[in-house]
Image (cartoon, rainbow, N blue to C red; front, side, top):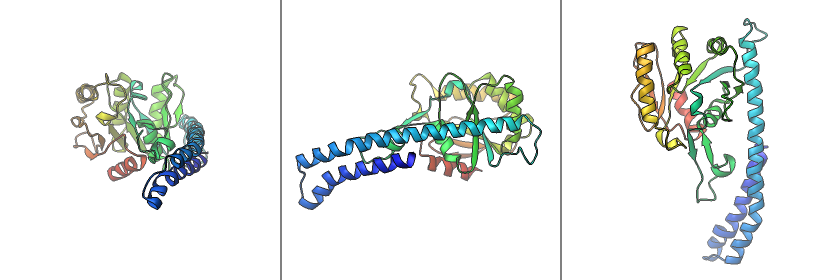
Length: 278
């Protein structure tokens, strides 16, 4: 369905291109009637393309949620060759309050910018992350129940969440963490350190300009979390950098390896940053 959406959008853009830039290149000027006619013809293709892309993304999310549920069920059972997940697991941990907060606006006056058709004009951190690692990992996160997000696979709220998260930490090949203030997130980071999984954890420093909520002060939230994590867990996070990035620790006492990156960038650029780090 996403491929169909891409094709429809490309047809619409080609029609507009032919009626504007194409005419200009041929005649040295624009013809108002031809331009308006091309836009009229292209509009339904662009609208259907955006609709098909949205439907395709919903189907992808349903599949990722099912995969996440299967991972959770396998984590609750003793590991065997039969119930071991076929693909490596990427666990995503964060305070629920950041769900849907870090959003980058890709909308543009340039109608030939494909981002606004393929990715509906905006991108949340969760979708960028999920798409960035989709080829290599099955992503798992716990749904907050308050904000619907897409990108990473989700399971519903856990009754025995500490036990289940601990099992998922043990099962995961990589653990993504957005370390902002939350008692649950502090516990999860402590569990990562306690179980020796710190070298598998990739911490996310969200880019400041990629927040949709003007009242959410990322820098002060980061400073509060940094102080709490150092005091409670003994882990020293780097100071906040508005440019954002990813970092990891080899052990509790080591300085973090840091890769600067716009966490609101394209999935491809985020994947490259993560790969440089791991």
